[in-house]
Image 1 (cartoon, rainbow, N blue to C red):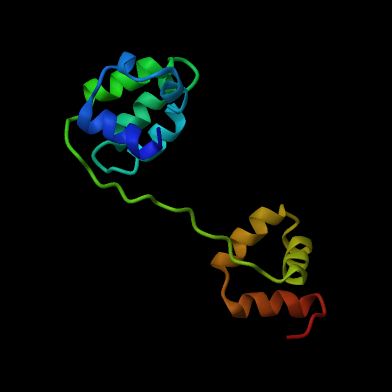
Image 2 (spheres, rainbow, N blue to C red; image 1 turned 30 degrees about the vertical axis):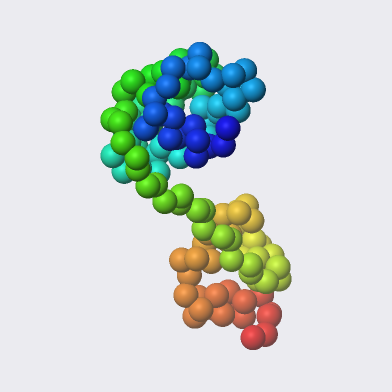
Length: 131
């Protein structure tokens, strides 16, 4: 079964866990279910609270039963929220800022997001770089 079929089972059909064959039961992933259900603003607090029990502590059967019993019946549309793509920065710029800030390169990339071009040009000039 796909993630969409599992979400429909939890929210719409609410069949008992034993009605699924073993192959389908193995495709149930509490982590992915939590991720998809958390895309719904009405479920986010419930999912956030329950996920500490759902992953690693409870079996898939128990997670399915809990969600299908607790969440209201009805079809819902949840738009998947994608992560922001990292912008590509010139490696030389990152290296200069790495020297300047003496911090990790992942933090340097975050700093670039908040700095304006004037600040960047001043730092580059301090290290003898041209435009």
